[in-house]
Image 1 (spheres, rainbow, N blue to C red):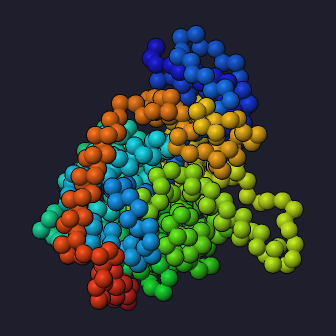
Image 2 (cartoon, rainbow, N blue to C red):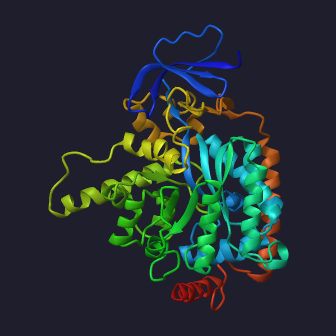
Image 3 (spheres, rainbow, N blue to C red):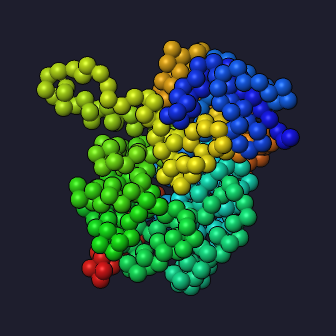
Length: 474
């Protein structure tokens, strides 16, 4: 018999419709799986973890994070989405080495784990060479997180750095799948170039590569207003390329017909409320998701702006959703009698919905016996939020911080224990991250003394023009 852990006496929020919420409940972990959930479970051979007055939830799932950017923390605090594109995508990304990508992914994934995120979709679009992609996956593996590494085909670096052409990138994607097929924590999916960035035959090849391997496909979809860039849902529909293996991110500028196509095809949607509301991208699209039968999911997106915790995303998303629902009532001179979106709803966005979007609904996302042991205990007695909440789920969504994440298990491994990441030398890691930041920005500032770049005819504008030409060429 292997390792067994019995989590005792917690407020167990299973996110499994058949099990519901169990007050004073227990969760038994056996090796890497959840063996049982209920009350008064007996396991004399198990290590007991007391969860009294604490909340036990499934690990959170982040469905879209550019993890490589972690050491550029808050550089985009006052940038619009255009400023972000010209800075991170066009100026900073070309100056990342493979080791910079490794450091960003390692620090970023550990930050996610510290905040109770046990699974993330790493939308990795800084793959300037095969070594960059290897570094990105290496950072995820060394962190111990469960992930979909969504390989990005974006070509921010010159060909001599690593890839002569698009076909080489596709070939390298298949190499990564083969090399990492023998482990279970990190799967290798695809993040597609923004629609219009490249000719449509290359978009088709990127989607085809992922489907050949049976992996998840992520898109930045309808992220920008006033440009065709990233807004090719009708083209994908006409080509028969939409499907349930896709996560479409943001979707703020879609029209009604495009939403209908996503819903009919069974596509998933990832919402990054903090980015969308702060960078001038538009209103988070929870209502459109519900209207078209799509379960919303949430993402941290860019640590170059946002925090690494999904809790702020939950708060902003539920606030935006409730505001949109209540605003017509207020404008009619009335007050709502009740709220339509509950804290349990938004926790589902960040757990089971996210797991299903990542193709991992049978693996994680709920505390269901037989699923992998990805479990989080929230409630720190040394903080004011450690005081038991009248509504425990409300306490998690509206009042918790990463410091309140007491314990985290991923695949049965106890990776955060008593409020501390296990086996992580944070001062050494932060020193390495700071050195990476300084060196990347030193190189960037040689060409761009001020960020966002103050230049005529920005590279993002050039991409927008190319997108128009690519879409016309069809």
